Image (cartoon, rainbow, N blue to C red; front, side, top):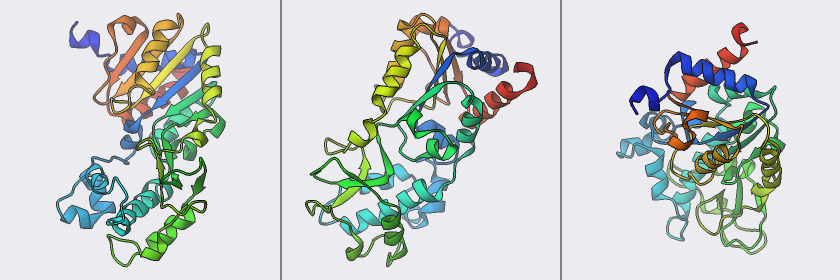
Length: 298
């Protein structure tokens, strides 16, 4: 197949995607890190490091991914600097950052359609956009919570006040005060961000919508269900990307719209019921919103 056959690009394919969305009985929306990156929350963007962490940029560390790799694990030797990064990062990404335009466009695009969202993002951009929590399945955690590092329980703890205190009291740009470090109220072990990093991840609070998500999908087996996948790559493809392909393959009336700035290809087996758009996601969301709310498609 040539590029034009394997990669559905341009205005015509965007118009076709808009027509599919408007014609859908229901939408299953899969959101990966690419959608947040399109709104400016990009972990590989040196400009964001210069803005949020200029001292690291001056040291020659130019991506948030690289900073995270320095402090991925908490230890007795690094705990002040571990929290010096994570407290600042959580404050920026979860609390300081407003809802970005791609998420606002998505909300305007789909709010009148029955929909359910699955996302691997932990930044609460979906919540900030106005989507109901009951319609969101986010199994990878949330920057807005801490958990026990053991963990001794399946409890999570809202952290806005704690994070603000740690950041406010930092003696320099790299470390928090020892007295601001937090410990589990049940067992005394250190608290850590509630993110899926290893087998210690506290996931139960994030699985409350799992059954509703499965039910929403099952109810769409014989309906015109469109799976709208936005910015999903291959970091954790088993959560959204591969299941969407399987479901479209198995549901006779289902369709897939995959939009990604790099990884937009779809399998040959479902190509006739898929639209693959390789494009800047921010622009793609603006275009889709305009097409679906414009007079030509009402």
